[in-house]
Length: 490
Image 1: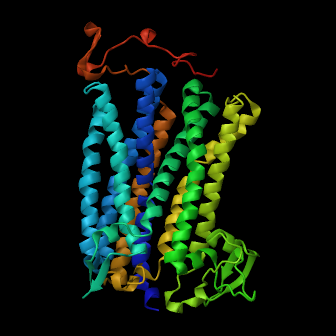
Image 2: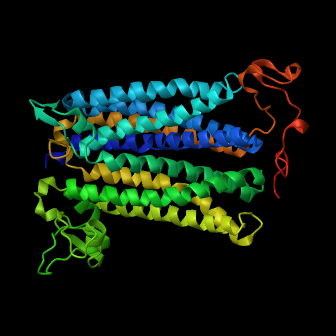
């Protein structure tokens, strides 16, 4: 098949490499910005220095992550034109508008307010600074909305028609509100918050295990657990709802995700068994072996005992996606989601029993699990994205434009060179980011920096330093119980 020619496969591999690394950063920026807003709001409401120190500490992590997201995002947009030139030209009337909306309503919006958030401490009013932090959180979510909208349109294209090699918009509203985006965007947004919660929870648990600033990080861990009790189950429900949308509009994708080749027959010769494990044959028209649970697929996808679930063999061989990555990627994603639910309710039980302390023997295992759980949302987002993109094959725009029609006409040597360049760049950014994030975590929060006085109004102006920051002696700070400058191991 044309889709399996080496230039097409290399173009797909190039773009897969770029998106796999880029998607590490925007979800964390979205979720962490929301958490910074909550942390700063708690500080304003309580005047508790713990929340200020935690907000400034995690703000440093967001800055590094944000910079990496911008660098890899620019590379990804450049790759569209280089690797998928014909598709970029054909989809320009729609993609151009969506990316333009993203630039104006999200990227430029975020760029302005993130400057106020980072550099505005002590220079603008306290409420204005909180407003800036809120807008960073909102604009980053808007950015994800537009990007998911464009990708969802590739999954369920509506409101356009292809004429003379160009997608002409017949209804912008239908194109923007395509069936996939209605659940795909909330699913990705909640995944972003779940990722940030898991990372903040892991860092907090690590500090508690190490006996460093225990009283402070126990607060952030409690907040994470409380949020995850709602967020983790919500993410599982959204994933199930998105699966119903996929079943309705992309039956080939669902069939590949479930390794389901033969459509259910009422006479019982074929039932909708759910394959727990399976391996496809070389012809991609059946499995070599499988471990199945009868009727379970019907219950999962139609919520009935014997509902119809279309199999891959209902479609021409050249329109079937490869099964292996969607099948196992989907299962890993589900396992990650359920793992986060387990960790959330485990932590909630410990909070309820007032045992969230490193000195309690049973809690140590939870803290270790919380540290390890930081990998679950990352892995879930990765395999979820691979499932989504590989499942759409062999189409770049589902059922309208094939991937082979959308890739640029480059030689194998040119594509290999681009792949080598992208690999070097993305690995360099990835290595630098994680090295610096690890360094910041090891250093911990800055407990010696003075707390800023907002708006330039200081009740004791004789002690005010440059920039409206009051050089308050540490002894005069309102210290929470246990003291913030000790190890906090109480």
